[in-house]
Length: 112
Image (cartoon, helix red, strand yellow):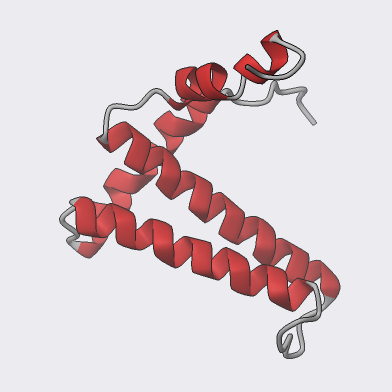
């Protein structure tokens, strides 16, 4: 197995942008505010459902714990992908935004 470095957030955003374009073309989707916000909401709901099943707080069907963990991972990936697409659509550099917003808590003891 090749030793590969983890992709940066910018690289993940580029992947999401390419896949998003394929998805939109394949299904004839107009990517507008309704699409992006609707997909974010949908994916958050799917993350919630996957977590509740994994935590034993919803019906699991015949899924094994490993399959349920995989479902949660898949749904989190979908949510992140659509968040990256939304940020790109809005011209937001999430790497920079996260560093500015969350990084400040590392600069001072109390985060102010």
